[in-house]
Amino acid sequence: MKFSASVLALLAVVSSVSAAAISPLTPSDVSVAGTEEYTHTLEKRVNGDITWYDAQAGYTACGLLVQNTSFTVAVSAARYDSTAVDGNPNHNRICGRKIRLRGPLRTLDGFVRDRCAGCKHDDVDVTPTLFQQLVGDLGIGRRQISWDFV
Image (cartoon, rainbow, N blue to C red):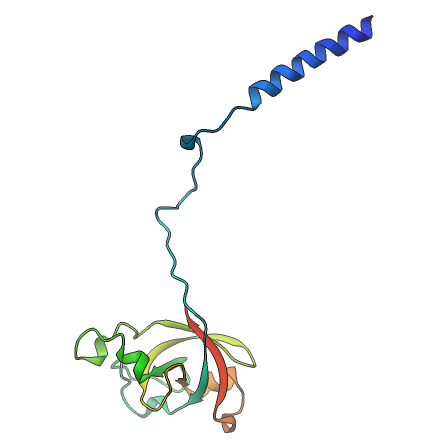
């Protein structure tokens, strides 16, 4: 008898705790932190050719003097011109955008600072140092890679 009374008392306590702990949530009880503040645009990964050029030969289309050791990227004229703000190429919205380049040796980030007149739409032209880091020997000259804006 003593055992049965103890078991019944324990079951009564457990059932009252369980009933109190399970209460339905209302929409005001549920929130996801930061949903109103955070937005991110996904950029499509692009496949194109990578070539290299002497970037320090003069001012870039973005109006900068850069070194061949920088991670400077020139995008195609079609892509560069499509983001023009006014008649001045130095004011282009694409200038300074970070671009992630995936080469056969590694993945690196560069910055759009120039315009490539001879590039096809999805091709990029980069500094010799960036080309060597991504592809290898400059003698390779041209290689297919993938890239996207980040």
